[in-house]
Length: 392
Image (cartoon, rainbow, N blue to C red; front, side):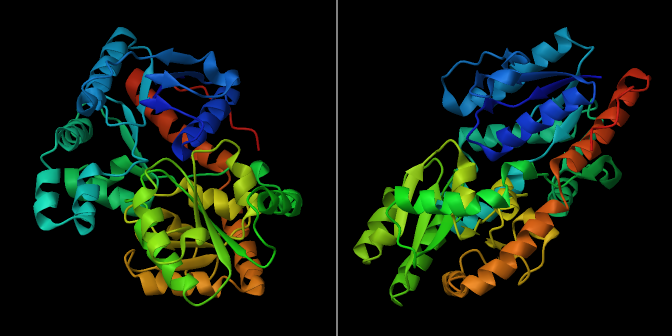
């Protein structure tokens, strides 16, 4: 097979991009010819040779997704021998991995973050209109052979919003490279993290990793930090990811909880943060399936997240962590964090989290994706894919 993987930006800091990097490497191991199409590259040197730049004007920003889709479409028409596997909203893609979910669903859920007037205007913004237009054209395209959703809830949204036949949508949960999170390195990583940020031994370290702070619940996390700090409990929250921290740091400082919350921006070597922390908190408003939560679980961290996160399809509330019914329920979030101040509970839940992650290893999930791609290749060409089984 010849597979062209399309992703608008390629950066090692994003969970989806790290996942795509691992997927591309394993597809090559299975014998596929893989090419990555993106407008920019910040990935590993070992895969840069398979990268092809898709040039897109930097302005206007709201039309860049549309211009990228047009440019990839031109590339695909010039290279009909390749199977176009999109990780973006690209009309004409033959296989789509809807890892970012449905933009139509996100706009519905986003209303809870805004006033009614602002929410109505939000849908009219050029960027959102372009996303919706591209999404609709992609799912209704005659060229579409298969859709991969990374959660059952994601599949339901695609079927509900766009009428894609359910049998054409395969659910493949995200997988994780377990070798990145060896338990033997946890004590060293924990000591290094505490030394680096002057964290005392009796302070529980909660980690958040994600960009797009409003969608991923940093507002609720800040309010929970304020509530928990008022009880006199000792803890720290490290926030890793891209976004403007000022609305949250100002609110925490004004409430006397400023020292509990630290924003670090995007980082490289996120494994050290996972392995060195005590628990992971991710009160997202909308998340098809969080790679960050899955990586935290692989590192043996109990997680606190919400029922809107597809990762909750691989563990039960009270088992590997806590599942919040309402992402805006600050008392419930603060209460779950307070429970995880107990080292014995963290150990029990962390063990269960690692076990849950072990049930979705990257090799297994890449094998499932390879199966979808192989069937699509046969539909496209009328020939068997001829792919080897994946190692392991």
